[in-house]
Amino acid sequence: MKIRNRVSGSKIQLDMTPMIDVVFQLMIFFMCTLKVIEPEGDFDISMPLGAPSAAAVTEAELPPFKVRMEADGNGDLQALYFNGTNLGSGDQAFARLNSEVFRAITALQAIGPDQQEKQEVEIDPDYALHYRNIINAIGACSGRLGQNGIPVRYISKIKFAPRREP
Image 1 (cartoon, rainbow, N blue to C red):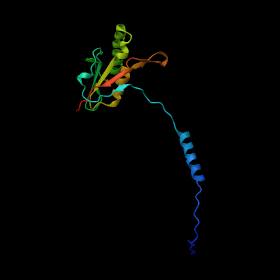
Image 2: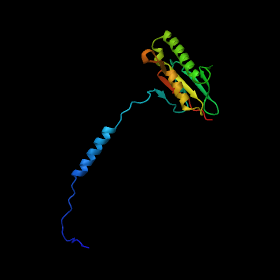
Image 3: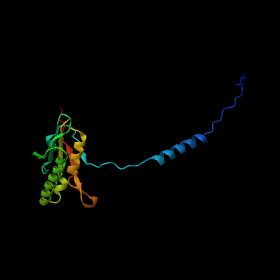
Image 4: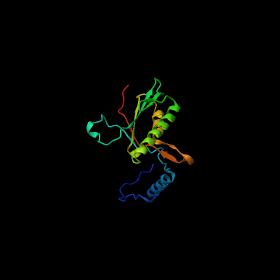
């Protein structure tokens, strides 16, 4: 075995060029493989911060449309209520909810054209309800697809009632 003489005082030179080349190649690789996707849905949703305070209510607000969703033991939709009216359960309930919201919005437009933008929907789901039912209710309140696939917007302000513990 040959032992090197450590007496020589020369420093080892490191060439930084290969490392910089690798960094740039990695940057180019990640830039080329990046897939920019659009968000799936753009819902303007206000989540509750806590118990509502009495000072938060202004004098000229419209009362929000109330959507109550009750779940059975499995987390499926048992009953859907719109302003206290039972709309049933299942997918037909969401179609009925969409038509009821449309009727209410049409009545609001008769009062004034700007009333539709001020209107809110408050969704009050049971604690154990499956999320797909909540998303279906948001979609039914938000609007529908019109002719030629053009979306017709009903309500853009959707909020949730404070959470009910089981």
